[in-house]
Length: 348
Ligand code: NAD
Ligand code: TYD
Image (spheres, rainbow, N blue to C red):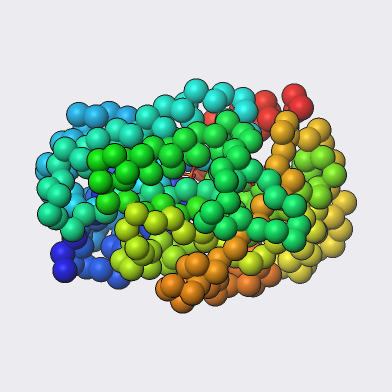
């Protein structure tokens, strides 16, 4: 069946993997990518599919109600996969307002357009992509499931939690057809090097310090971005409308152990030794969540999804991608990045 899908934030890290997957796998779908091209958006991530007949790019802001409405009309949008967001916790601590604008107001703007363009009888879906950080921090051996109470602790997670609440409210109040998924930390090709893994890969390559916040004993669950894209594809087509699903990698690791693993992989690939000596303990992130862990039994039992890439293999593949795409890294680490890095790490 034909679908006209609006994907927001498709030029970002996860969005570009979702756009590519849908454009290539479903040539009968029309995929429209709406992206503001902030510092995190990069059309280079989609170069290989930009001339596909079923792909369209619109540069613009999800908070621009007129633009969003015109896209719904022009492309007869009947489905939305919403990924556009401000996504970095450290930036949310430094400057929270834009997180409220994009993550909350942007989400509501999109849902308003959906409500005014969609006929109740149509088979339409608003799929909202969210994070496990909405649940706050959890002690071992417990993990977040779909009934865990929201307890966001950073401006980023508070903005995402708020957007999730609005999506549920629109479902409940206006009967908007929705799905929400809450996923753990992603890694893989095209991730902007403000996030831990690409930042460390870039710094190891250049022999720069590897900044470990606090003692490095915070735990994150890691999922390869292609596995996330597969889960989104599956939920988009087969998820139960009105429900939420947790997605995770079954790969919990302390930050310090993860960085050591990366050093070992990079040393092997570069024929070097001693990258671990670059590790530098720096002032902790304020309000740093201690541990995230995800229970994936719902998506696993309902839809058979589970992660297919184990962490070590995924990291090796990711390192390979960054080493063969050095120009990509050079381009994204010039300009604004230099100033960001200076503010974030030299004034700590
Ligand atoms: P990203 O920062 O790499 O990309 C965000 C994209 O959104 C960029 O292309 C940017 O240009 C675009 N964007 C930002 N503001 C916009 C606006 N106002 N209008 C239109 N476009 C705008 O983010 P990501 O890591 O790919 O995350 C995508 C989504 O997945 C986010 O909603 C995030 O909360 C969620 N998520 C991320 C992770 C993760 O580990 N990265 C994990 C779980 C969930
Ligand atoms: P990050 O990639 O920013 O993702 P999130 O904060 O959304 O989990 O950070 C992952 C973990 O790594 C988190 O516990 C913070 C830590 N971290 C560092 O220790 N040093 C760094 O330079 C960065 C960016 C993160």
